[in-house]
Length: 232
Image (tube, rainbow, N blue to C red; front, side):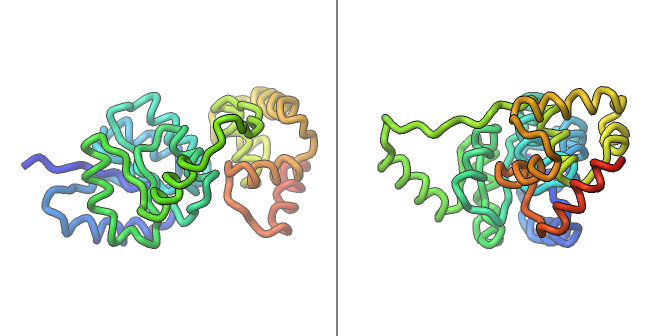
């Protein structure tokens, strides 16, 4: 029997270990690798070609949504199943638009995980039941005439730079992380600031949090990140 191969992507070792322990109980599922950040998740997906990528939405360096978007583009055969503590419409919508085949809540993962992986591998969509019910209700009650204002569309590289700025990386650190020159990083930074019409690092960081590019941090930490970037 051919087993469904799975790549585990989460920045917490204990979560990956717990998921591996759960999945090893299934005869038809095989964990083939792990990744602790978005860049590694993309690289391991390319290398291992898993059937399903179990992706935490809050990944460092490159968030789960952007990583999913790149996997969908570069390794389309791999199905991404988003794993998250967030059930709000914004996170779910961003994940689906990026190409995720499903969205699973961590709190119900032990109950739904096997079915989610099997359905996703078959090419079917899977959402944790509470999310699925809410999406269906929202679809039924939608107003076809109403349109929410679209946020400015950033390129993948601009999104990547935005996340690293919000995570407190300096210009030099971003350049090293992305294998770019500092001058190129500054060009991307200026381009995304111009596109968003945001010209202060602290405000840019708040935008990254509000738009789901990074998860929220204490205000003092965000302020420290802005100070860190501005003085390096």
